[in-house]
Amino acid sequence: MTSTEVRTFSVPGISCEHCVRAITGEVGAVAGVESVSVDLDAKTVTVGGGAEADIVAAIDEAGYDVA
Image 1 (cartoon, one colour):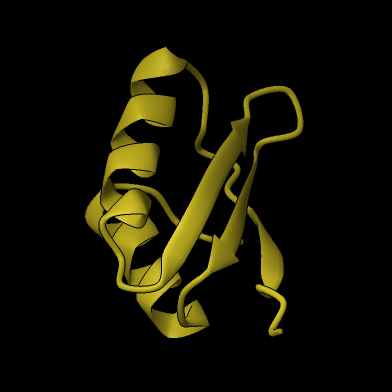
Image 2 (cartoon, one colour; image 1 turned 135 degrees about the vertical axis):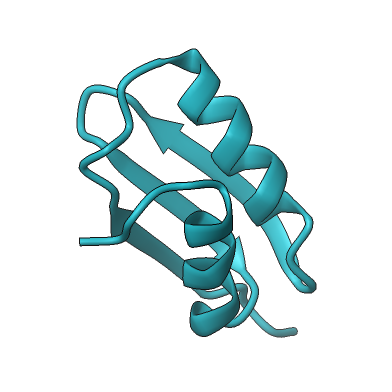
């Protein structure tokens, strides 16, 4: 049985529910991603699965920069 790698990314530009929906949609479409959680207060995105470079690219595609 394999475990899914979970990564947390700091995304300082997150400020509202629109940000959450945009990031969740883009990152959720990345191959291998099993879960996406956005914390508005902490300004973080936690992702289970997927390749790190693909996740960072998806966050960028949503219009946000990973710190």
